[in-house]
Length: 611
Image (cartoon, rainbow, N blue to C red):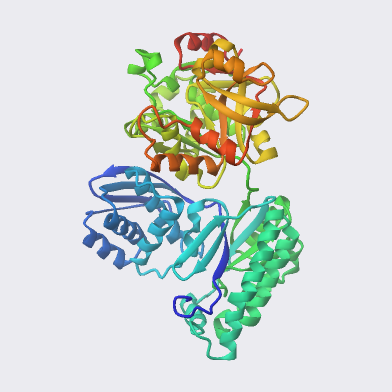
């Protein structure tokens, strides 16, 4: 509304992005195909031409399929794209419950087009495409809902006319939320109509009260809430939620008294059986008897609260824990390289699929060993950077074996086969269409990383810890101490420096584990490494990374500056820039690395790994 009245204070909101979602696979097609599993277990399908006028007509008709058509119509207006076959194989996000299911399907479609056609949209770009795509449907959506593009967590949004700022909020400790559908009547259209009557210019005292609530009061309140979230102070946050509800009842409800009386909402908020489990609670969105949210005191309180809401009050409820930020939950593995050093084996098998006997005695593709170790270390999403034409090959690793061959496996292997399909949901893909260097490959995962730290793994290495913490876990522990770019270091022989990146810096602790980095040098000469590099006469090479958003920003700038030619667009220059501008640390890993990308080293790996 500031476009019409500049005296209005910019709007602010904090959006909790819950864990329920829509899961899909997408493939290039000559038309727009869409299939989805519905809540009752049935499957619905549609197919449309990619002609923009046809897509806009479908979008205008409304319904679940209209959202996909709207996004396709919007993106095809600005980008040269073909069609898409989008298969939603799992849907855990309820529809028509005030939980932004329409925004979620729009973001899903925008992200699918972005990844399939290499549109290089940022998360914000995907949000914009989703928003304008939904506007082509009968849905009168707002910009808040598209925050689901950032994944689970809390997103801070600021509104100033058409200018929108979106930043993930810093969360100091896990926050345990519970949402419930009140299963009552709510006239959202009437509520919004009545509240909008106060804008853009207030004409009555009631109008001025609402302007104050959504203006100065909201800005002050948001500052307090952000501070409580950043400190992880759940008790303070709960009190602020309760204050927000009281302020809404005082300053907003008088404009729509019938709809915002919300007797059921307030009765449940005041229920003593609920109060003992929560720090605070409030309504959601436009309020009324729609959806209610609580901040529970603990994970155990979440369980007890959900039991009461479900069993006694007969409500549908959902829980969500906003994780502490800075925790590493994503990993990236570039595997798009051809593997020329392992020729001619790589004519028929990707080098990361070369077999290794794991410690459980199973013969596994090397990549699978890495994926399983990442998941054990707490990683929730693993991005494989691949060549587009190889996607089916990687997916096949997690697809069920046919029944005939499954029956031939012994009992232990049958159980293992059943567990593989569960890994599929943790895998996402990014695509490198040309061999333009390691840095270029990593940059293709920028949309996966978002604003989060990510663990970067070399696609031709395995790692074995010598302590009770995995090598990946040691990396994560080091990052959480510094929250800086973190490099995993292994000692190498002097003659090996010419094939690896070598670190320079000084130890920061008596245990000689954490290193304050000064520089990284890619494949130095032996003479230079021995005379100029090293840490206390040791040659420490780089084999693991936890990348921060600054690294991706540096890579993006390199691309814009035209440094993306073959052989030039490497990762080390971007890391070096971040070391100089933001600082970085190395951690000497208590473990052993195993190379599978060089024949003689692969031979050693096969002979020794897992023993």
